Image (cartoon, rainbow, N blue to C red; front, top):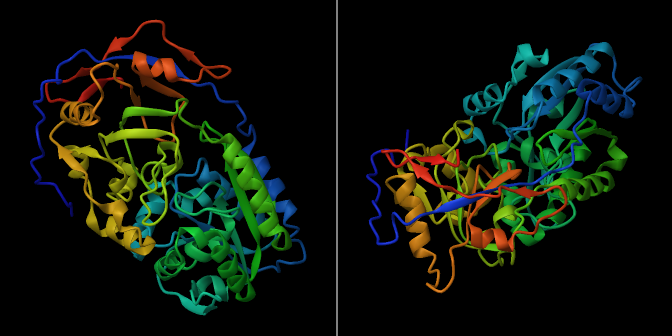
Length: 434
């Protein structure tokens, strides 16, 4: 089911269309810090949990799997399951993704399979569920939910990437703690957590996790920190007593490795693809400087007048959460929007502004030139425009000459000596930059 599959879109025919638009290619060089031995790192992380004597032969151990596109996640889960079987345990991989996948068993299983997480790839049964048990309430009255399969297991190991959250502030954001609350809480857990509002999310997340831990047979977490190349930089086992303190430290590490745009602002940012595999909000809120949270200010940097997106990734499965962060989109993007997972996700987060519909333009060319026209660039100043593949891949980007002058040329960065003209096909699809 699509939301706007029949929407005709709007053709922009303003006077600026057709002007020469030339871009310089800019390359950012991020440190090559990926793990050379992922399987070995998983073995070390499992050893750090000190499970010998804590896991009995035949014990049923739940291992969590989420909906984000974590690098090498099937291999990481397979390593965890192998280590558990060597202890004589019986692992099962449980989908733990809050309201993603439409909040349904079938939708979650489809997401897991699209990430390569299958019984064959991880060496254990892969199951999903949507039912939860209520465990208690925080001081603010928020209900804590949890999957009964995890509660009834002999042990639970939570696997997740530690990184900044697209809405939460504070020292604990997205990681093992959030997976305990929102992941294992499924859709009810996600809806409950987001009732507290962005300012209180980090504190409330910790309070909710402590309630969950009183009932869960939590054996520890396998935390993943990725570098700017979307590679595992660190895989670390965290024992229960160290959970909150260590996750705070890993969040600091993750932020230091995250890629950013190398300029303070732009008139127009063209994003070639958006989707849940790049960010929980389709586009990373920190990268674009927009949050669209009622009552909360946006970031001061980068300051971008117009953001347009050209396509929705197939890995997003129609979930266009975050489309409301954009100003203009193309008809081909709009035609791929599925309201069921999109609205389920946004309603659970309570951030309805992030599902609001931008202007829909007929082609890439229409979207780009309409963005330029509406950015209100004074005739006395040259256009500052950038094109990126997505907000996760910022190693290569393309900028106009005026924006190149504003670009901070950090160590290892380079720019092409000559610009190239942006080209579009006869159907108006952007061909360069590809």
